[in-house]
Length: 613
Image 1 (cartoon, rainbow, N blue to C red):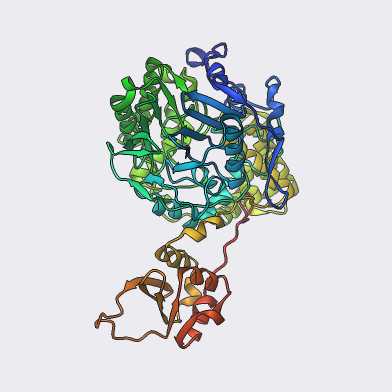
Image 2: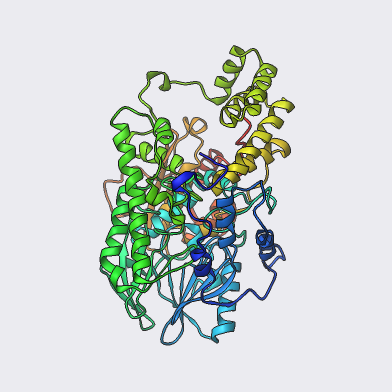
């Protein structure tokens, strides 16, 4: 839960300890040569001036521990990690690492946007001399680690791209299938629409925020399928550790034996991470995460002099990095084991989240603080992974949805005005948590009630100002902003990934958009022959479901002819689904089947309501 200080009593980290600041500044080579990074259309996608306010003392509108973390994340420029390894930091939410090879440079995790990745690479080349990109390594399937790939290599460049097994599958599953909902929720937890400053965005815990440029993706040419796999790229030897089910469902660490350097991807950074991020994702496995961290110590600990990651700053020294990894291991193991211990005593996820505190040995470590993940929402996620949404109480089985529940609660309490008045008393008594619960019901029961919305906005602001967790702060402040101003536009889009989808993934994405009730009474069968791939697919609309299947045109078991057959390329399919190019695509049969399919496709809403019904 949010606090007004970093911690209390014997578990408080030492603000006089400046080790993190020394490490964050170590190896500085050069800062950015521009004040802002812009897209081709002149739009600013990253502004270095946004973090200038963090040079001052902590104001009373920010938790001091979070202010410290934000200051550390605000460093921007090119940094030397060790001989032949450099990092671009502060150009985006994540870091881009550059490893020098025999003839060029290998890029690791090229940020969110092509514009920021290109600017970071330009700074590196300016300082280290002109050299080609001779490889790209993508540590995991989150867009802040691959989205900027076209800022460092083109689609047709003959450059090896290394990624963990399942990278494309999980990148699409997360960023496309549920992409609209995740991006909308992500706008809350990242605070991208907030003003920059002491009363607004001070960061996300992992970095300042995400850039808003052009995103893309490239399929890997080399897949890492297991721990122990060794690959040499441009003369550099990589030893890989595959870590599925940790911070991402497809993720890997790697060791550079010739540099005695260990990259932990996003599996060990200078904060408690998420078991379930607030934007939504597949629930991560805290037990496996902990085991992989321990395995990294065993595999690479004594063979490493420096540890770096795709966020934050490195840790130097074999003893120091081993301690760091061991504490990170214990952090996730403790949350996992204690959550299940208490669940097996009959406590629900909400109850466990109130009961669990970190042991002093971990709570005193700055890197275990909950700037991005939190003990509270991680415990609930672990409970969810094992026991699901149901808390075991029969009354939870069939609750009314929020608006209907709110109307009934408010009616029981004497109307919206009475609820707002009572909530005001809780605010004055300092019980902001319950005041927020009450006011949520008031707003959902009567979304036009100005006093209810304003008091809830004020309550959210006060909760934000005390929150150590950056994403909680951002959610509170975004809620306050939209209660007062209405819905704000979600600035990010995963549209740049569409060009890299497989045919199967394109059809899966289409199936998700079928309006089931509208399609109940429609049937249509469409065959697709992809001449560039040598593949055949059949998509069948039935019972409100679009069923795609790869087929063999010589299979005599397929006795029912299709309503229409298209002969086309994968690129033409994308054009067709965008409503273009039908006249140029060869087809036989009844084109009305395509019109039927298109007529039952739903549209997504990237700016749906969150704090109002």
